[in-house]
Length: 368
Ligand SMILES: NC(=O)C1=CN([C@@H]2O[C@H](COP(=O)(O)OP(=O)(O)OC[C@H]3O[C@@H](n4cnc5c(N)ncnc54)[C@H](OP(=O)(O)O)[C@@H]3O)[C@@H](O)[C@H]2O)C=CC1
Ligand SMILES: Nc1c(N[C@@H]2O[C@H](COP(=O)(O)O)[C@@H](O)[C@H]2O)[nH]c(=O)[nH]c1=O
Image 1 (cartoon, rainbow, N blue to C red):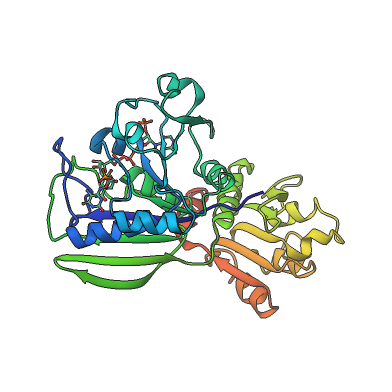
Image 2: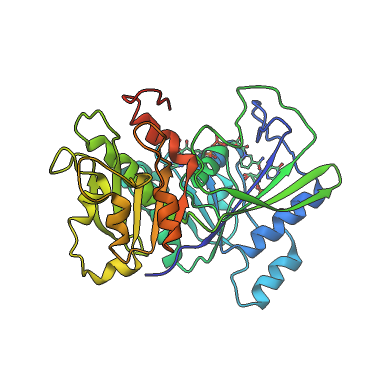
């Protein structure tokens, strides 16, 4: 299996967080120096992706403009221009738009197969699910040899990449301009953004501020996917007066080894316990597996002899990823501390904790 490309998001926004105004003409937020740096990002990329609204609204060419940068690419044995990529559910894209008609680079459209019959002569149409899933798009791009993907927006696409934990870097240019119109498209919509961003660089290009962020190494995109699966599993729990929790045990490549939820099999069963019970104690895959649990593993319990923390410590599982620390409702939980003290790596993803609290609002004092 080829690896997924490194994903760089790039956007220019107003001071109040808009990518454009609400008029039909494109708002230019970048200055000349900023556009030159974005051109360098394009030249570094094997493919450039924009959402279908951006194709419709901006009619972009998505070409490397600088002749010098194009020559550098060719001298390095790369194609003169990056592949152009878009994603659509509706398939409502004009085959005469510049995305399709300008330049010799391949054009890829990720879309449900029935939606795009009118585009088959101008692009390669790829089914990545209905609606298309970003993970499948990245897998497919990886198989096509794309190592670096530049995502130029718009806001819906940026939001999805950040929500899925699939963005590795973000370059944001901030122009000294206020759009002030809620009808205009925003850089980011609402969502839970699970991979914290670290500010790597801050520069001034004339009147534009350039911020460069890198996504934290952990949680990884696989962690985000499997933790979200664990959180969703809590919906399977029978009605309960205690926590509703989901757990997934997965291999390093994300392969699911076992799943569980509270109340599975027996009313007092915990999610981690139910998942562990499905694997043999001497399963060699446990030595490299990660336990994903929507809630911190319990550290003391009345209903069963062993806590989930103890059960995990009896396995060689080296890593535990959780969304929410157990609040002090029933006991003072110390699962995270005990696991860490025993040398197990614990990764917390607090950005997803609200989703876990939402599944537990039957408990006193718990609000999303
Ligand atoms: N300042 C800047 O740096 C930039 C500004 N812009 C501006 O942003 C605006 C467009 O942004 P926005 O409106 O948020 O839209 P997007 O460009 O992000 O496109 C959203 C559309 O893309 C398709 N799409 C996105 N994700 C998926 C998915 N996972 N599966 C299927 N289809 C998907 C859908 O198309 P469909 O409806 O066809 O199903 C959706 O309506 C424009 O005004 C543009 O000028 C854009 C880029 C950069
Ligand atoms: N308005 C805006 C950007 N818009 C982006 O540039 C694309 C246009 O590409 P092209 O037709 O090749 O010039 C457009 O679709 C959108 O992705 N980018 C920026 O860095 N700064 C800006 O102010």
